[in-house]
Amino acid sequence: MASKKPLVAVHKFTSCDGCQLTILDCEEVFADLVDAVDIVYFMEAKSDFGPGPFDISFAEGSISTEEEIERIKLIRASSQTLVALGVCATAGGIQGLRNYGDFDKMMRAVYPHPEDVRALPKSLPYSDFVKVDYALQGCPIDRWQFVTVLTSLLAGKAPMLETGSVCLECKRKGNVCVLVAKNMPCMGPVTHNGCGALCPSYGRDCYACFGPMDAPNSTRLAREFALRGFPHDEVERRYRKITSWAKSFREGLAKYESETHQR
Image (cartoon, rainbow, N blue to C red):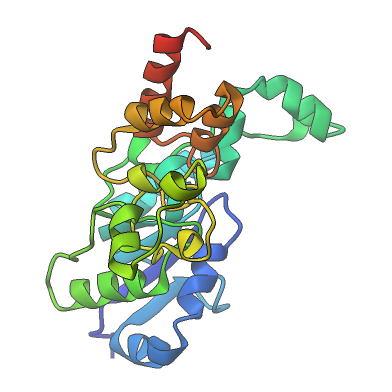
């Protein structure tokens, strides 16, 4: 008899597999999740694969090859709901650093036969090619946010995820602001919450591994860094790190650089 459970798939693109491993790390509730759905495709967890269409597709990794462009389009066409997992899927990931350099030069420096490598010159998010229904930020994602999204979708409800900044989480925890008190170049004011303000809770500055919050004032924070004496190279590195290809970070930094004529 055909399964009446929702058909779920977990797909991988160019990535480190960290978001998939986070799913497997949902130890307390993983058995219940498995019982509630039929996971028909998950290469990190099983060796037998079922075909689509899928009720829910989760996908991690960025688009880095022509083949991946076609594959994400096929997954979108065969999935009722598509959820992007992590900053590779939503902003090109750390491999998006190549988007700012000489791709051919980098290929020649790394590979003995670069002509054999079929890669795009840029690492890109799914949203450049298909509609994404929901997106989880993070490098890797937060496992409880994943559980929230999956259980909400199974209940027929739109997932409710916070859209504020890491600063909100710091306030809730009573953390001393490392930007104000320690003059650290903290990206918390423009970074999506969900990590629990992990780094600031240990006296470290946030480096934006959860990507930009909704409508961040990226240019204003770059100005603040400059006013606090951070050199341009340091300001640029803060925005061009794990989520360097995120649109609001790119545009915010570009505006700041145009103001200061430091491109």
